[in-house]
Length: 329
Image (cartoon, rainbow, N blue to C red; front, side):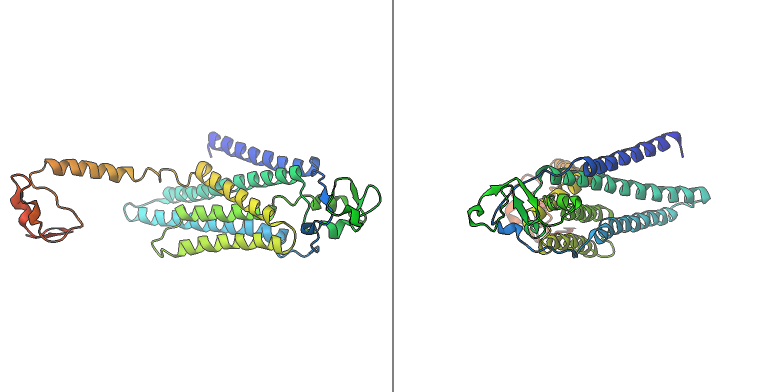
């Protein structure tokens, strides 16, 4: 490993450590904004569900296990197929094999690094929004049972429909639980899982070949996006988030997945301008055909075209039968 490569990897590691430090600092020193509520708000009266359908452990398996496994398998087989194709044209010695092995791990390292960078940025953006907004979760009334500053609560009729910001919880709620109740917007499950699955869908679009099956790649993309969709919907069904929290989380994760795929990993680089080459070929061919003695017939026609017999001195060339693969002698 050269000194320049070692320096680059050290800088990459340092950037990841900084991002992780920012995330931990937000959790430690940025408490969520204390937000009030309207007495009688039915959106805050849902029951508390302690056992979530997709918990933190299951979420970590999805957002780390699936992308890492997919990237490892796809990159490994991509490099293996390239090695086999190269062996058909030239023989390789032991040094070449070690070079190919190093290249495989380099590609895997790069793709995982791109993914982790976007994931940390998505996580930080979600955490900032959670703590700046301080939206109460749907089970707020069930857990907190708020007591207002005058000693009354929301069961009194004169408090119905009024907004209150000064309150305390009658129930024995820890500080951690109090902070958790005020971080509903946006949904962290939705933003991270949509980032993971949409990013992998983008990755498969450019990395997975369709020579074996044209439908396999798109079926995998659909399955991963549907997994993210299911996880997001469980957050509403478990009463841990409002529907708008989940929607914004989905959009946030998808946005970061597209930004990282487009500008960091550069999955789609050169694809927008790929049609310029065929266009130039068509232009040159049309110019050449215009200058040739025998005009080029349209590729989509079939049979003779007697109505072109008056086009120039070479009109006899049009009288012969032809089809879309060329002239028939």
